Image 1: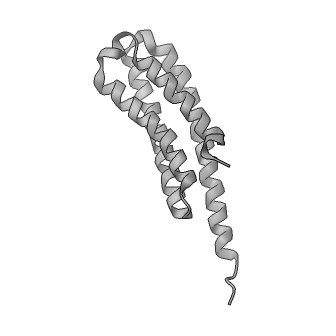
Image 2: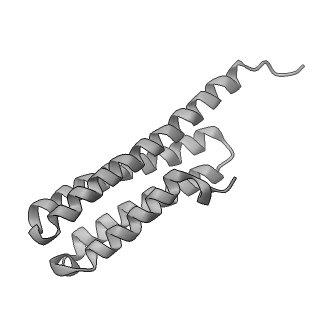
Length: 128
């Protein structure tokens, strides 16, 4: 399996594309601070899912997945900034927030799966 096959990565990629589309229109186009920050945060979700998948050490996988989960929270928070300050983008921000929650849940699933593998690996006795 490749990281490109993970639903969490695919949905994060779609989210990145929608965020870029949103920030390249209207007044958001002129707000480099908010636009740049939400773009970077969205890319961080996608990139850290890929990085975590490629890591071999379980602790490193968990670290990358946790960064992705944190970035999902950051994107959600920035979408509130957009909703509150850019009325023309408010409805799209609300929709995107729902998508970010879904991606965050998928990343949480990766975290839980990796945690269970780590716990199970500790239970296996090492050969002597």
